[in-house]
Structure formats: C-alpha cells, structure tokens
Amino acid sequence: MSHATIHKEFPVLFSEEQIAARTAEIGRQIDQDYAGHAVVLVGVLKGAAIFLADLARCITVECTFDFVAVSSYGKGQRTSGAVKMIKDLDQPIEGKHIIIVEDILDTGLTLCFLRSLFEQHKPASLRIAALLDKPSRRLEKIDADYVGFHIPNHFVIGYGMDYAERFRNVPDIRLMPPDYPELH
Ligand code: PRP
Image (tube, rainbow, N blue to C red):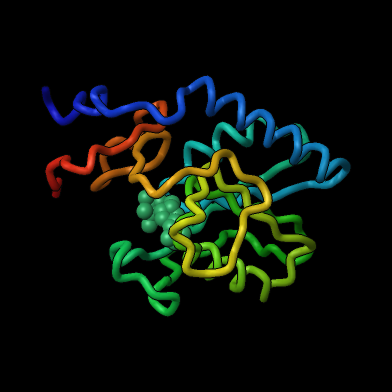
C-alpha cells in the first residue's frame, strides 16, 4: 500500500461523526459564553486549521479569524525559551475577546508562550479551545477552557495533525502505530 493510503490501517480514535458532534457542543458553549459579543478565533498553524474551520461554522456570535505560526524544534528538544513566533497576528487584539484555537494541547509550551504574549496586548478576554488534550505530557501549568477530548499519550494523526507533514487531510483522528517507519 502506498504512503497516501496506508493510514487506512491505523486504528480510528475519533470518527468524523464524533469530532463533528463534540465540535458542535463546543460551538454552542462558545455561543452561550459570548452572547452579544464578537470573538476573534486565533488559529495556531498548521495543525489547528481544520478544527478552526469546523468550529467557526458551529458558532453564531460575530466572529473573525487570525492565525499565528510558532517555531517547533522537534518535540523532544523544546524548551519554553525555544518557542518563537514565525507569523504574528495580523490585527491588534487589544480590547477584543480572543479564543486561541489549537488542535492539541501537549506539553503546554506553545500555549503558555502564546498566552503570555497575547496577554501583554490587553485583550478583553483570552480563552483557549483545544480539540485534544494530553494532560499526561504537560510541562507547563496550563489548561484549555474548551476541550474536545482528553487522550492518553499516543501519537495521533489526521484532522489537521501530521506525521512528518503527512496525514493532515485524513478526516478522522487515528492512532499512529509506534513501529511506523520514519518519513522525511
Ligand atoms: C502541535 C500543535 C500545537 C503544539 C502543541 O504543533 O498544533 O501547536 O504542537 O504542543 P505543545 O503543547 O507540546 O507545545 P506542531 O509544532 O506539531 O506544528 P503543526 O501545528 O504545524 O503540526
């Protein structure tokens, strides 16, 4: 089987239907929490792009998008000092209701970095929506305000999440077999 289709052998962790149902619930919660306000969804590229696109369509309060990209030097080697902004916000966030949208909250280094950076710009409020949360991997004390699913420490792909940049387009979330060959 080619690399393009091999993921079909990976076990499904969350189906498209499960992801859609949970995303709709989070959207309804955001609608309630921000009734009468406008929110800015800030997606963290690239993994969060698909979750942001679906979550945004489950929200009916006024909503705009922005995106940031941060550097990653490989998971094992990251330290708080090593997270750097590669693409900053396009618009000022002062006085706005910001929801940072992430595909996965893992060690927490990325979101800790972004949260403290954004707080300096004095938003009206700042919350975090993460589709997946791996609390067992946490190195920084940070929690998401909206969590799709808590998961154990397994490497997952699909629905925006990659292995060596592949599999982001897989529509469900699957477990990556530990013996899968290294890709470059
Ligand atoms: C992933 C994910 C988060 C970050 C979470 O991004 O999208 O941004 O890691 O990990 P942390 O809690 O340990 O900081 P990645 O660096 O893999 O980039 P990508 O979104 O482009 O895949």
